[in-house]
Length: 198
Image 1: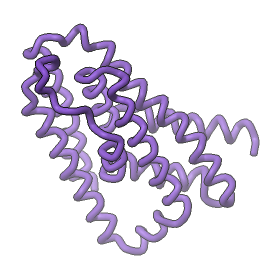
Image 2 (image 1 turned 90 degrees about the horizontal axis):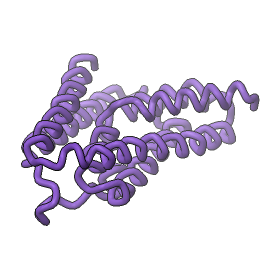
Image 3 (image 1 turned 30 degrees about the vertical axis):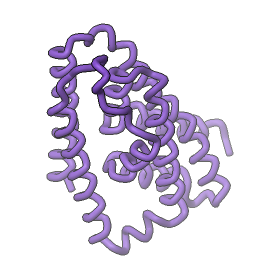
């Protein structure tokens, strides 16, 4: 494979992974609430979950879903419902960080599940494999997934790190509540867009 192909794959993976989306917003909020180190379980789970989705897309899941449009619609509806659930939980959060009552950070399993219910992840996996994986044989599918894993991990971790760095700016419960509600509004807008676009 040529260097140009690797650069194209990397550019696609970076653009899809670093751009705002529900998983990155959760990583930002988790880093802010719990700190960078405590966010790494979510980051790892989200990366592994997406990479598994990407690999399965390259190995035939996308083709299977194209044959069953009802399954695609069901996944889309579940994704929109999940985004609304995330937005609701962020919206109603009281904004307290260090009182000992803060909920635990999202687990690795939660991060992986978020990717499987994230419409942005499905679009990125199917589009990415369609453009770079399929047609190049199994080796290209695995190489693309490995490259994507590294870039996805670094991207989600960057959002968690940004949240951890913002922590000192939002150490007041009122400011934290306002931040959480802004993030909830962004997630809800994503859900509305996806509901009407699909």
